[in-house]
Length: 452
Image 1 (cartoon, rainbow, N blue to C red):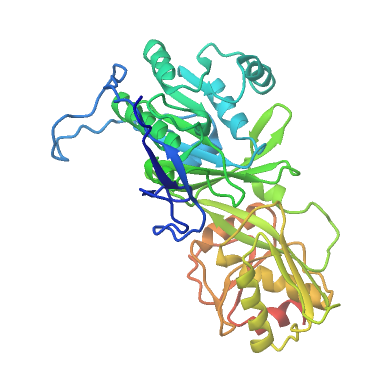
Image 2 (spheres, rainbow, N blue to C red):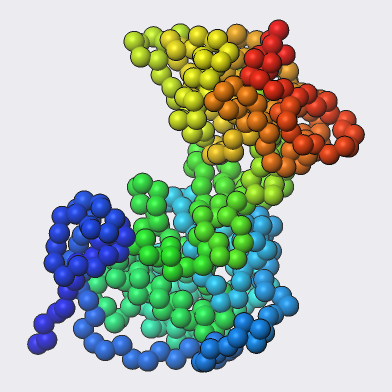
């Protein structure tokens, strides 16, 4: 009997070692190196399905024919926007998210609604279970085929017979190859199965979508090389206690990574939110202190979000600083600017900040709205409901301009806001606006203008 060949792999980055070590020398993580069984038989040559294949010889870039239509629309407006216009033929897309967030629902309803022949491969549910969910989220569709299989050899045989135009795999951690003795979900299996799917996608020019699990720290399970191998990495975020879900692009070789898709989870599936600003802003007609509205951008989409702040006297010796959806370090910086430049004594007070809707925002253009919400809560004076803000705050207390200010102003005007505060140095085109544009240069000016 032949001796089984083993090797040691880092579960974090996928680095390979001949023996066990405590710390991975590649990613510097401790206790992540585990032993796995390697292949015991020679791998036969895999023959791809018929279709357009890559050239076997090098070509000049001018000799390569460019297709007129390089995108395959999915029929989902939000998904197409995040992908950059649709799926690229021969591409591999990886979508990850927390359990129960709606990854399988999103891809199943996309597969059911696309007019192309789609193969949905599931290693986690039976065909009857998928049928029950499909009957709830989308009408009957004869162009979608369901396959419950985890062995890659059998999957490729079915693909060769069916010739699908799009392949969806749910999930990559459940697949296993017979050429490896390691169990499904191990680093070796994930890497090998992904490599086989990449070869199939590139040689048959068929787009493949992979659904991936995530670890407790929020990263996609498996070696980091998995994210390097695929063309696009999408992250599906949201709170399971809320109905809204956010789709972000962490990596996209064919488009921008700044795009954002927003969905609403309902009983019949995920519905795209066409106007997220109306949902992210509270419908309360009563003016409340500690609330301000900011005009931000996610990719090419302008959004108006609501900032909530609570400033109160510190009960314990050390004041608390807590933020949800906004970087904590930037909050501390703005509090220091208010203390040093504007003279507000906040060092002995607790400050809590929240961005409504459960979304994460890193746009510095919301700095001025954060400052306005903090000052409003500190003075217990509400900001007018028809006022919004779009500017960055510097360490010297100056109000700095932000890009694409005209688009932010147009969005605020469209939603019925009457006043918007921007930087005095912002370059605004000479165009009449129904909304009043107020320019401020220093942080002291915004405090006197709002609260006198």
